[in-house]
Length: 172
Image (cartoon, rainbow, N blue to C red; front, side, top):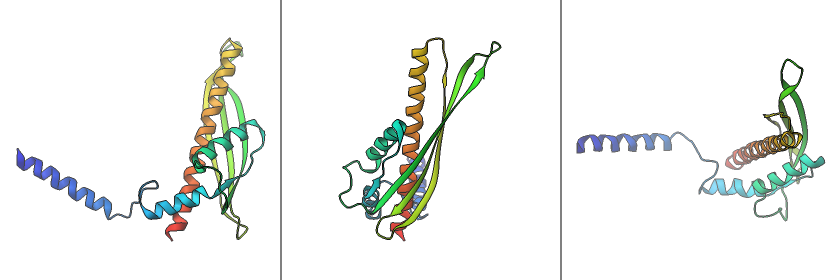
């Protein structure tokens, strides 16, 4: 019995050693290079995004990127253009829609404020659907919830992409 345990322990140790040597580095962790990338991420100024959905996305990004407050001396600026499309996709025999699809797209540009150059451009997209029911209030609540889900997904995706980009720059 103990032989099998020692084999399992040895296999786990070899697996851990192989993973440590493969160059994998966690984005968030206690590594000093990641601390540098986190500091660079915190130095990103998120510019105002137009309309109400843009305000919500802006606040979600502030929570993720500038969790300790807006940067006093920003190194980078993040511009975002947000678009939303809504389509009825579930149509029954009497031409009544029962399902709607909501898609949000955020085109973003990361600028270096000192050099005044574009560092990164990208796009994040999120799709979700919601039911259209007889109650207008319930349908509006479902649409509102779907919109918030898409905006949260966009904020998470943009934060991850910018963090990975800044992490790769600080590692080189």
